[in-house]
Length: 103
Image 1: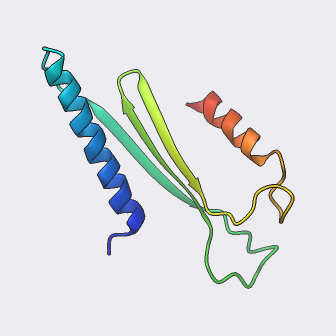
Image 2 (image 1 turned 60 degrees about the vertical axis):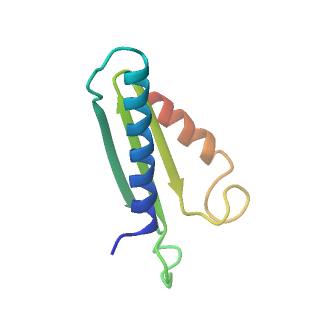
């Protein structure tokens, strides 16, 4: 069964590939587009604090690279960030900083 995330990821990859080919052809130079893609999904469910969880929570990422250009799409399954639950107020700033450093 194909999940919605896979459908969206395939759609985005197709759009990017079509755009890269169009730009290459329209620029007068035909170059082979070398698009790299990677995806990951990590279970972040806190079963220690909430042992009776019905549905797992995930962080998912799609990273695309074409030469020197790199883009990342990241999703976090979380109801609330900051002030509610166990996710601290500085969570988003820490994630953004780590992404900038590692990408």
